Length: 136
Image (cartoon, rainbow, N blue to C red):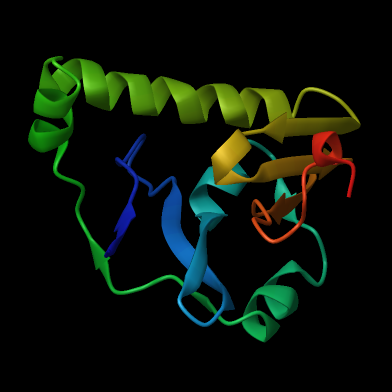
C-alpha cells in the first residue's frame, strides 16, 4: 500500500502518512506532520523525534496524491466534502495541539499526538502491546 500526502492547505503540505515496521510483515500507520503545518500552528517536533524515527526504520515514501474521487465514492459523498472534512480534521488537530501546555490527541488506530509546551511527539498504535482490558 503506497503512502500518500495530505491535501494542501494554505499552500503547504499538512503531512505524510507512512508505515513503521513493527516486525516482519507487520506495519503500523505512522503520521508525520510537515514543517509548514508545525510552523502555521506555532508547534515544533520534540527534540530527538527525528532521530527516533530514523532508528525505528519509518518509511515515508514514495508518496502519491490521494484519490479523493475514489474516497468520495466509497463514502457515498462528494469529493469536495471529503477534502473539506480532511482539511477541517487537521485544522482541529493543529488547534488542539497548540491549545494548552499538555495536550493529547488520540486518533485510535492512527496513533496519538502529544504536545507538551507545543513540542510534538507522535506515538503510533502499538498492535503488539496487549490491551489493558485483556488483563495482560
